[in-house]
Amino acid sequence: MTRSTGDESHVAAIGTGLGIEDRLEQSRRGSATARVSGPGLRKIRLCLPAVPASQGSCCLVVARPRDPICETESVLFVVGRLERHQIAIYLTGVAAGAGVGMAWPGSSHLLELTIYPVLGAVLYATFLQVPLTKVVGAFRDIRFLVTALLLNFAIVPVVVAALTMFVPLPRAVLIGVLLTLLTPCIDYVIVFSGLAGADSQRLVAASPLLMLTQMVALPMLLWLFLGAELADIVEVEPFLEAFAVLIVLPLALAWVTEALAARHRAGVAVSRGMTAAMVPLMALTLFVVVGSQVPRLEGRLEEVLTVVPVYVGFLVAMAFLGLAAARAARLDPGRSRALIFTGATRNSLVVLPLALALPTGYAITPAIVVTQTLVELIGMLVYIRLVPRLVPTTAGDKPARHAG
Image (cartoon, rainbow, N blue to C red; front, side):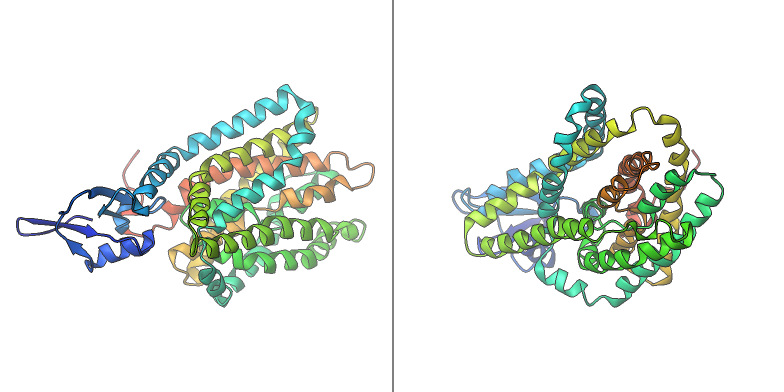
């Protein structure tokens, strides 16, 4: 961040003992300013990715070529370029997955086997950006946790009841809709919310609570909607497997990497590499999810189309209901964005095994669950752009109010 006093320009003269965030903060405060001088120094404009420049995330630093901050420059440049084009990259992943799924239906099983490993890698990269101290602090945010529970298990069932009331659905289709819409997401919601500038560590802290609550609440909710016949289909294993593979393991690896980075350059290199790979990994996740699930829709287009308006209506309704709940709870912008995402994203990848285990006569149900996944993935690409406009962090983030 260039600073001027009269005709003299000053820049931050940064040593090697601070992290990037610390150096930027030091530069913002003006506590480490000096003239540009000395042999072998480079001037670098350094910006943290995914943070608007209006928040003071950029500064001009001076360092020697072997300073780690010089090595970081190229990584941040790559990340910045990828993030500027992330929506186009994600849409390409979705389109490529759909193309592969339709052209080579036999590949769906292989692609399905890669969903958890690829999604786990994305979450690992995401957790590397969430310091341990912030996650621990998020567990003490009772206001956010209570609001998230009320939104997901009090407001969402009412919305689902209203949406299904006006669209006549066969029982096998209805059970697929209920399995997905009544279960909040515990995995890639963390990634998508982070891309929208949400306080994603709150969702990391909320994940075990959301998982345990939906395991208890889903049978009761199914009984309310369907009666006792299918209320006992809920099994614990898919939920526990998803939580262990997609939350516990990546989070533990991220914390180990964080500790390693504090002592060895190998940990720093891993962190940089995963930061640079974040957008490609997310595109790969979209590719394998869509490519593995599209073949399940073959021959069932008519039934599938009946639920698309329900799923779209849910995403639209939850954007504004989540915003209203955040305002009622007086949450700050980061937590408000996180709340909107947790109210809108569903656990379809986790409940799919439940749909596959249903008895004869419910063959359409897995396709209904898969349809929600595909609609939601497209919806999340919209949310990445929409939610920051609904919940701006600064006056500069507010959408323009003009005709057209």
